[in-house]
Length: 580
Ligand code: AMP
Image (cartoon, rainbow, N blue to C red; front, top):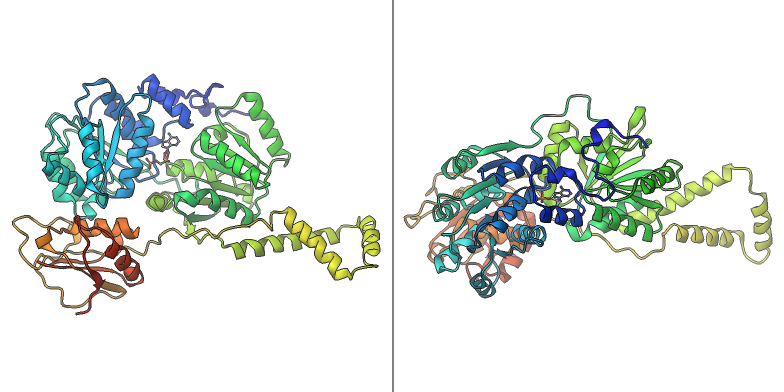
């Protein structure tokens, strides 16, 4: 096995201990946790953000979901809180959506297990009672959506006087959802001495101005700013499939079955995933083997040998393990996880399409990671085509096609006499078509063609962004309107009778200013309940007793249906299609 010189500093030792994380200044208990999670090396954002955050600096980071930014802020936060005075809560993480609040809360808990730091997620749309009692019992870190955080602050159930660290995660999304004023209001109530980190996938002026108001002399970090040099990105057919987490493994299996990969490298982020994916693919009858930094040199050599001779068809690897390997040309590179930076992506897909041969790079993608994919496209100047996940019918067709091709190949070979004798014997009793059909059936079965398969649901689609504007037709109660799409908003007070935009429907919601409704509440409710991206929501009009929101026509019915059943500002309200 060949090791590239650059791999030596990051290749884990035989025990799997990663010097990469230790060199960032993280303490032993966190390293143990990362080891148990199967993380082999820090991602670029982690490498850059952890040291200054550990040193107590404020930070302004440009990074999208999928870059590993949660650990980038959570690890130093846990280390600092874990050893400081436990005045609860000590840290506040603000995130745009309920889904993210849950996800970040779980991640913080996972990373903080050894340090016994507790975390709680609070978000709108959930009954407030259990949150009240959990806050009363005391937690170290609160992860919250801005609206619900303010609710708790006003009730006196979330106290900010001891907050040492504040993180604004996905700040651009929070502004898009109209939370600008809420963020200012919350931050103003936190101590001046706190440490603040702000992460955003984009860095428009309005994010810079929030940073200017609330961050002190921040360290600035931008990941993947440098475009990949022209000609460095391999010429490979690139495809992506978007699927929500619970269906990711099934999607991977489906894609592998459909493309019929015979020599593929499947990349995962962590050792645990490598092991899980290998077990899953093996159980489905694939010749799959794992390779990661937790394995001994001997084990790795054996696996590589087996892959090179074609005995193993699917090699499941982490980036670190694959980096030092002399891997032959592979037909497919499959990313079970989008890699954390454009550089890693290019490095991974460079394993296929070598020496003028055709290569295929396939990525399984979480809907939240589509932004990172777009940024990878920009940096690599190559298009990644998003395709629907193959249906069961498409899979069956492919399986039959492959069996047919295999039979046609066998027909070209000469050594069929011994089987012809058998066919002759068998066709005395049965017609030749029946015998052939039975043989094909067995072949299809052997290739998994009779295994029951389920359809894999498509992830929520993401239509092109629609500019949103707020037209608050009345007084705003002395409070400036929250800045949903502030950069592109229309002047407040302008009436919107000119009609809706093409392709948009207008949804009537039976609650308005009087009920305390703000644009962010509606955007939040629609994004969370109907699982659509906030950016598809169009103009929002808040009247005294009702509100009207423009949404894509294709989504109007589902939005009306789910909003009608949801709680908005603590109550159920009538929701229907609005006709002028
Ligand atoms: P995030 O960008 O924070 O949403 O993280 C994306 C995914 O990457 C999560 O599933 C994390 O568990 C995973 N992850 C974060 N850091 C690392 C790392 N250093 N090595 C492997 N996986 C990681």
